[in-house]
Length: 199
Length: 222
Image (cartoon, rainbow over all chains, first blue to last red; front, side):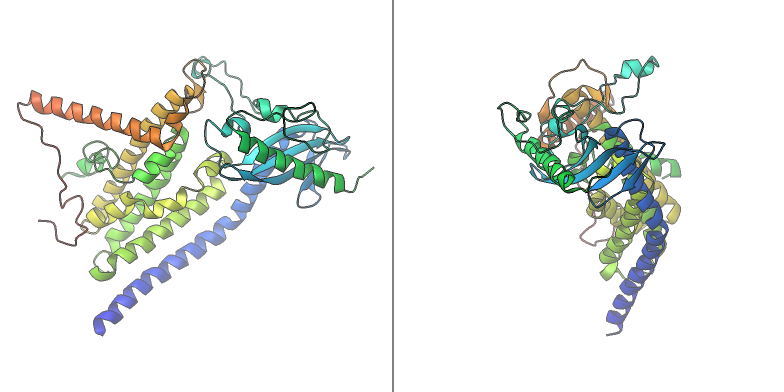
């Protein structure tokens, strides 16, 4: 009986001290984490929005509007989740110009297979080690991706997956990933239609 | 054993990945690129360092019957701290790729293995050095694996192009490829050891499981 009490006491003490330490760290990192998340979103929004964007303002859960330095509305950025990728959902961020054209698409979160599904999702820079060593490397902030870029410039009215005219042709070997991205983009387009337009 | 050797043993002689064969799960999962490997290695090193110190501090106060749950609680606290800190201060890109692996450090056999086999029997300073050494060894092994896999699969190292661009060799990016590269590494290490033994005129005997490395049965080290 005495031994059991000792066991319970020591394990309980370890747990209590542990949770105390965790509450401290949690409270101290809560704000920086929120800021980091916000910063990450802003960084990615900068990439899909026009370079004149000065500030962004949240409209609703899906959309942000981008204002230039005069406070004029120039574009929207919308994020949505495309269900049914090869490994779970795919989160996309879409920049849409004020007149309803796609400015850029990027995938902010995905679990697709590296080298296969990621061909459709990743924007990968092609800087070579030699150019960095020679000091000639340019930093690519928005490297191209053939599939994501095929949507750029089209009206944001929703897309159909397929090989026909006006349809979106996916990446071979990454059909599920391509479709999931398109589902996400279509969700943004649908929300864009329902968005109250500003003059 | 001198303090310096306590640190250095984790790098080569008792390398957790290549010799003790501990922590295979994160090794296979995260070594797909050099950058991920480095991030995972640093996170694990921090956890190992912290948990080794705390466990060696409290080793006399904890009854041996509940020592494993206590160790797990201590390790879990450190892992959660690392996770929160990384979310707050690490680059977003690293967070995204490592996010799902960080909680797995809790059950990384290296951390629990060192707690049980080393920190529970040695003083604070030695345990700290052991944790650092093991962590560095883990990081180096992971980075070597990651660099080789990334280089062959994509022609890049740390996302910088080193080989001419080619169609990605997907096999090496998947866990199966990690097994193959790891096997080649181990074969090479054994080759070096056999060579060394031959030069010294001995026959090479592979290391056997010793109580110094394991002792999960609860027996004291002789």
